[in-house]
Amino acid sequence: MVSLLVKASLVVAVIAAIFGTVFVRLVTKPDRLIHNISYLLSDEDWFTSSSKTGFDFIVIGAGSSGCVLANRLSNPSHNYSVLLLEAGPSDTRLEISLPIGFPKNLKTEFDWDFETVPQKHVGDRRMFWPRGKTLGGSSSLNAMIYQRGGRYDYDEWNQIHLGQDSKLINKETNEPHWSYQDVLQYFKKSENNQSPDDVDPDYHGYKGEWRITTNNWVHSLTKITIESFANAFGLEINHDTNGKSQWGFGFNQINTFLGRRHSASDAFLTDDVLMRSNLHVRTHAHVTRLLFSDSDPTQVNGVEYVDSRNKSRKIKIRANKEIILSAGAVQSPQILMLSGIGPKQELEKHNIKIVKHLQGVGKNLQDHACCGMYVQVNATSLLAEDNLSNLFRWLLMGTGPFASNGAEGNGFMLSPLGKKLGEQHPDFQLVFLPALHINHGMTKPVERFGQSVGHGISLGYVLLNPKSKGEITLKSSDPFDAPLIDPRYFEDDTDMKKMVEMLLLYRNVTQTDPLKSIVSKELAPGLNVTSEEHIRKAIIDDLITLYHPTSTCKMGDANDPQTVVDYQLRVVGIKNLRVADASIMPQIVRGNTNAPSIMIGEKVSGMILESNSE
Image 1 (cartoon, rainbow, N blue to C red):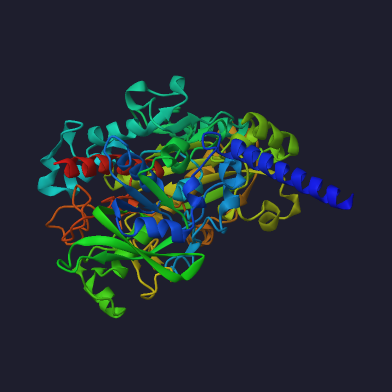
Image 2 (image 1 turned 90 degrees about the vertical axis):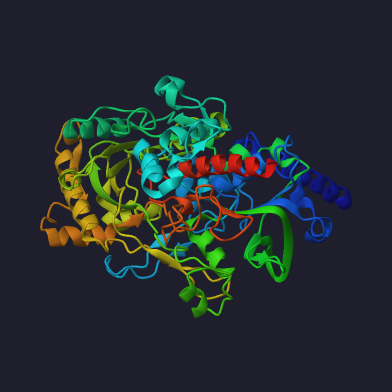
């Protein structure tokens, strides 16, 4: 009898586990139920079947660009075999899909959890730099904000950085490569906008894989904040800052679907894509270096990686056509340098054999620095919605406060100092959260402001065009040592002067209706912080990254010694190797970098397919 009960219990447990797994998958990934059955194959089986034949294309990094590349290159109509390597695990954690829960994914197994070297101009702080370590990369960790940057960003890429290549016309778009009118077609190709009434149809796509929507739940505090900033600066309410004009204040467009995060993985690695016989996805695959041909030392012909769960075994896989490095602005230059491609002095320091001296690898690092003002309000904030009722509402219907990404409002404007310096485009992005969001959302309000803090809002200001530039260098030749990240925030004091000015402007806005009627106290930096010295100190103490590192493998003209890739993203002087991620941006865009990274993956996919069909 006991034995029968035990067996029955086991059967019930198994059934419950199966149904529980299916339910969680339906809740978290409604368009990816089966996921990738190739994960069930053992390394031994897979290695035996793949090592001899190799793959036509190997994509390193399943982030925003990498997922697009894997999808497009493995399209059955092209008959190419594709291997996608990702250092992290799969992306099936519940908190990844929960928009309001995105801070819960930081400092987990899905995050590289980097930190910078001590920042000389930020009080010698070592600053936290999260980066995605899972399918979807940072698109599985971020705040889901869909911002492309301004049209002027891409026209500047073309006109300032491409030199004589700026006149080359893309046959697919009939526009100069990397100009705004050229890249617009690739933004639209990926996009499947779910809020057509809120956007200008001339600037948006409706047939792509990536679901974009205007937040389907917005807190009243966000609406009040947007109205107050528009009134204070004399700018319009603009809910489509990805459209005709970037200027103004409005609701953020976000990449969610049915109230859940819609990452690059969700969009481009759907079940039907993962079931393609010519696409293989390997998680926990930490690439250690690129491999080169014995007959031609400047020709890449494979990769070496190890399983990050068991580092004892090195696996080498051949690429028959090309390798595309999409590991992001931190690790794409790291992998290049570990493979002997980079600044000669950096490679010699770590006894790495020099394959190609490229001075620009790891240089030109740019990032969006963010600071905030926190105010107490005599109204309830988003934190008041944190209850089981709203959780079940989200689980069952994908609606309500849990479907909010928190960063509900945003705006773009030119600072007075920027205007004085002759700048013509927005130099600040303003981000509004209807709650107290402190230290990446990892610090509770009561921990910073005490038990009597009550409710509040966070008013973030983000410097879009920093003059300060940093670098990525190697800590050692060990591929498991994180590289040295030095963004050099505020090395150019103009950046700090702009931030000081913006904080003072924010203080004025909190005294503008309708925000004035609900603000009861400035929590931080506090009205007692008035001198420039004290304001600078407050900014230094509060500064964080907005998670937008770029430009460490910059695209450019052959005459620029800092150029790493040409306009087709081919690594200078190396055959069969491209870089495709935010690291190729010649200069950082004036906006979030996730959407541009998707666009980069789209555009280079077309280039790769065209060049390999000739």
